[in-house]
Length: 124
Image (cartoon, rainbow, N blue to C red; front, side, top):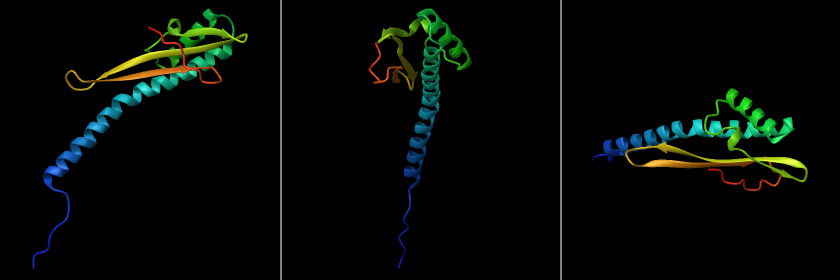
């Protein structure tokens, strides 16, 4: 009697490796944008903590953005509103990652310092 071998075929192995490679490349492109998003979140929190006027908050954000390697937005892109005698800072931006040919991945990031986590106003 012949024993039947179980396992993955060569075609299956190539397909699995291609799929793992695609996911790995996609992850390597997404992780830096998420890291930048977290740096922006931290920068708006620290800018809000400095207090002061809108201009001072923008300058504090720009200073934090330089040290956090933030290039997607600047202090002028922030939406700063006074709510209950306190400034709330929010932002929204898009990051487009080209994949293959005409295909690309669009990531929409937004955040705010509001306690309730209200959706920030869209910026253009």
